[in-house]
Length: 126
Image (tube, rainbow, N blue to C red):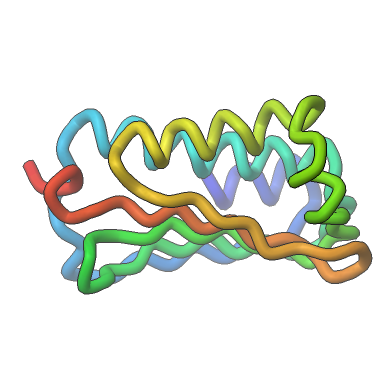
């Protein structure tokens, strides 16, 4: 999907996943995929990015999903003060938190954006 996204949108993409990623429960797998899809949709709609990185990582606590772009970024302070109008970000946060995880955003104008969803191991395993 990441490769097709790049080809359709003329964005250079890179996907990384470790060989030893634990098997995901069906619910976790669905939510992780939807978080990545929503992040890519936001990039397509808003970021003006030319490069995107999608990475799955093993962590001591579970797994992390990271999606990073080199686009225009946005004011995180503005988002914190008024999250309405940011439905995609809110949905990703709800999906991660619905699995008992966390969702973080690192961004600033002109510096791109990185989202990270951390899913705890007890929700990840089959």
